[in-house]
Length: 236
Image (cartoon, rainbow, N blue to C red; front, top):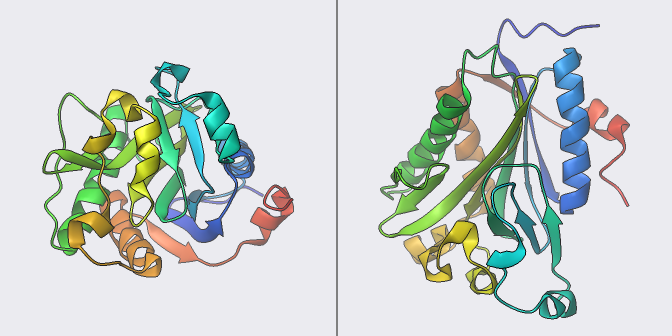
C-alpha cells in the first residue's frame, strides 16, 4: 500500500550509536522504499563509532597521518557517494540522515542544502550561538572562524540521503588526522567548546526536531518503527 504524504508526515527516530556501514545500508533501503512510495519521509538521528568518511569530491590525500595509525586506533575509512570531502564521525556528534522526497517538497538540491543549514543556524541561535553560512564553503555552518556542522548529501530519483553532522561533544583531536573538507583541523569546533559546558544529546535532538519541522513544514511522528527492524540492517 502506498502511504499518502499529502500531510507531509515524517517519521523520526533516534538510533543511538550505529556503525557507519550499517547506517549506510539502512539509508539505501529506506531510499528505495521512499522512491517506491511505501514509506513517508524519514529523519534518522544517530551517532557513529569513530570513522572517517570520504565524499565524491576528494580522496585519501586529505588523510595526513599514516593509514596504519588509523588501523591501530580502530578507526575505519569509508568511501561514500555523498558530496564533499573527508570528515570524521564519532560518539558525541549528532548525525542526521533525512530521507526526503525533494520533488514533493518543491526543492532543488541547493534549496535543500540551504534549508539544512537553516535548521542548524536556528538550533544554534536557540542556544545563544550565532551561526552563519560561508559562501565559499557551501554545505556547512560556521561560528566565528570555525565550522561546527558539515553537510554532504546525495539525491537519487528526487530522494535524499546522507545529511549533516553537528559537533556536540565529540573529541575534536581526530580532525587533526585529516584536512576536513580541505580545511585545517583547527578550523573545527563543537557545542561543548563554544558553550564551555556540556549539553545533553537528548536536548539537542529534541530542539533539532522542532526546528527541522518548522523549516521543512513537516509533521513529525516519533517512535520505533517496525519497518526499520524489518529492514534488518541495524544488528550485527
